Length: 200
Ligand code: ADP
Ligand code: MG
Ligand code: MG
Image (tube, rainbow, N blue to C red; front, side, top):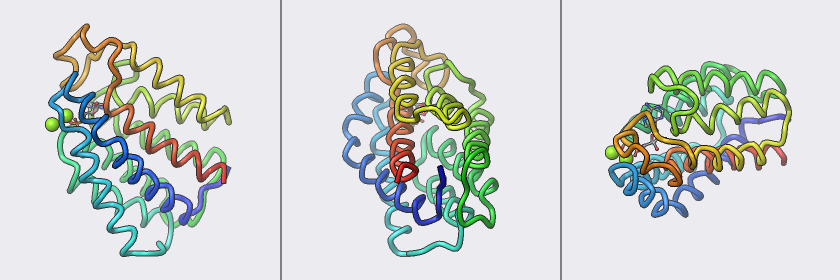
């Protein structure tokens, strides 16, 4: 599976549309087990990304594209999720530097690095009912060349049933079981669009 610069750009535009379509759902989930702003935060960030991608047109390589997206997300999303998503894209920028396209294990490795960046930034690990619970099985499936959509669906189901032990949701304790983690849903929306372009 190969990811070209133009495909990545296209997936981010599609992700922005998906975030917009799920804005209220993301905010409602965050109202249940957070402070009710995740949809608003993500919408603000991805609307800004969309604007920039449309204004910029074609990018030189995957590194340049990732860098700009990361900076924009850090500047606009805010909350806990802004720096976390921003870090993921800054890590992509490092892994993709000077590359017009990537495939196979090199592509999988970029997602490992992005996930490690999120974990380091959030001082978090897999199993705490955060976006890490989506990014981790995703890069594992990518490395194993397993079914990516199936991996994302399973990860969403598993995350929903966990108790939150990190971030704002952790204050809600057992009440978080059975409620989807908003950052996990937004991550799945983004990663699903990347899967779409990978499948062509
Ligand atoms: P805030 O909690 O500051 O209002 P958001 O509502 O935008 O920020 O984002 C909340 C999401 O961020 C959560 O649903 C979770 O997935 C993710 N998150 C929060 N804290 C962490 C962390 N320490 N590590 C990884 N992900 C986290
Ligand atoms: Mg919030
Ligand atoms: Mg907030």
